[in-house]
Image (cartoon, rainbow, N blue to C red; front, side, top):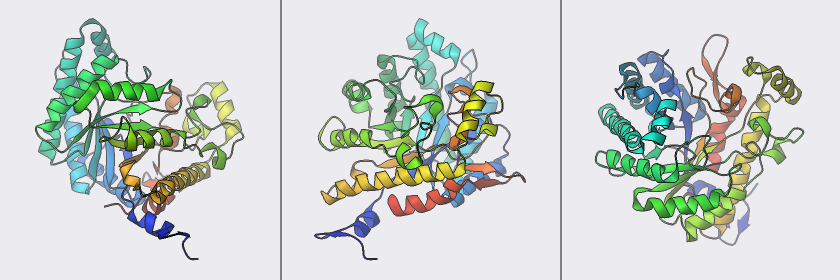
Length: 383
């Protein structure tokens, strides 16, 4: 069937011209059980199975430093091994995230904010040195996470801006092309648009970009899963945040900034994933009985709505990558030791795209198998 045509515009040509980077979130550095060789193999599987050669990886101040503010050698070694394994496996660092202070570090932020900032700066400098040593060049370095929510970032905006500035100072010397960013939660957060304006105005030139986290049909609903009874076609069809972000990127506060969808994804909730959940939660999930097909259908719908959003812009002469430079899919592979936020790990386990089979070998879920095709045909060929 011939592609649709509007004047000289063709959908086929528009899709072919897209160059939106795709990456998956990576928590392997959290897992102490992998050998170096296993880390290399894991990253190769992510690349081969999911068709994604770019990662968003977190390094955590809470694990890097002990209570006295000294580096924990075992953590540093694990992080170094993971970075070197990425390099050997041929995957790139789309986003390096410096996030998750410990409880005591957050308490320090209240009593002595300058010391808190100093400890963060110490971790940022160490992270830059590890990347340099491993030969890994981060495209973006993210300070903290979803900074408009106390659920994720428990310091105020002024302190957050200081952390952004320290991140810039730590990384720009070694990686002058790296973009310093942070992220904002959209759906489920109060006045995220107003917060973004204030953030960008106050951070100034030290902030090179902003990532936006959006889970269509999830954060708006209890337990992080789509509304009971709604089919994926409806549940994952939201595009509201995209339009505000695009307008601000093209004409407003985000002009000149690197803008990305830092987290987006679809869950595959099954009760056996969370056996330790309270009985009431297991009963709710048992009624939902979402399986991996639901996750696949969710990704189909998410990429379909993004595709249509991009086509609307492209018909007006605006390239997709001039709105969103990259899109991050949550989450790559299921590994141990991940620092989860929601009860029972609901914010992590259902979203994983690579899981171990009965033989202990990582295999893609139905959504994972399909995601590579969706990325190549809707976001552009990945390097």
